[in-house]
Image 1 (tube, rainbow, N blue to C red):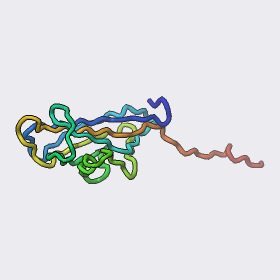
Image 2 (image 1 turned 90 degrees about the vertical axis):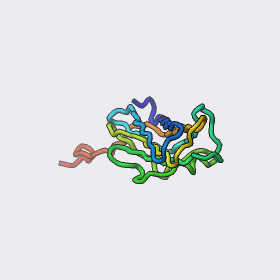
Image 3 (image 1 turned 30 degrees about the vertical axis):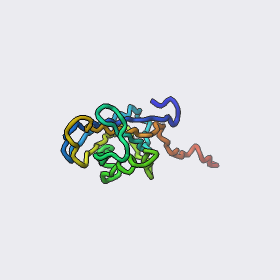
Image 4 (image 1 turned 180 degrees about the vertical axis):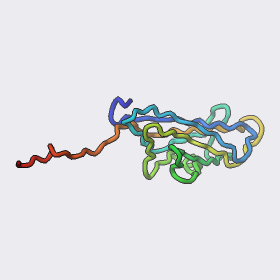
Length: 156
């Protein structure tokens, strides 16, 4: 339930990949938005971070930093194709701003699938954890009013 309209929300996805992970391995995270039937969630941006298995941040020059992301809302992928999150990892801001917000309505399941594109090496400190913060808001749905006869008085 929104305490303000709109209410800022952040949904976090942690996709962990162990050392010696093969290429194409996926991690799926289901997100519960906890919205009421008259509310909607809009996702505006993704903020990303990449950590090794000890929780230390990985520099943009490191290897094994190529990941693809697919966001599913209801039965549809939004956007319709998977996309690489690597450019956001390499950017200074670590942000990917979406050109149009992703809309999540009541009882629409939302999930994020992260795919490790390249194989991870075996050994210590070769595991990877991709953290995605979904910058969003929870807002009341705006309903267009309908007109009735009482809105337009008639002379009888």
